[in-house]
Image (cartoon, rainbow, N blue to C red):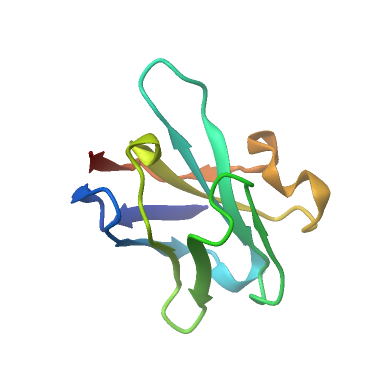
Length: 126
């Protein structure tokens, strides 16, 4: 079992920044790729970004490329999502998730992920 806890959400004005954290406990965290997903009211959950177990590979949704950066510190069992130039359409509940599946083109598929956090709210005002 891997337990994931997100933090760092909040209310920010458009153009501002937030850094989300995903803290893990349980099985060796460094064995898992980690992804961030988000879900806005009335919309389906969508992929945001993912990082391989080593941190050597990353994947981003087109909507966040150049604005968001995913990173990890396996010594601290934590994955981060730095979000810059935030837009109102970034408003959502953000979830981190962990998968033991091979990092690749399907990493953006939420069905690959076995472990999920409870989510943290991000609200961007215009």
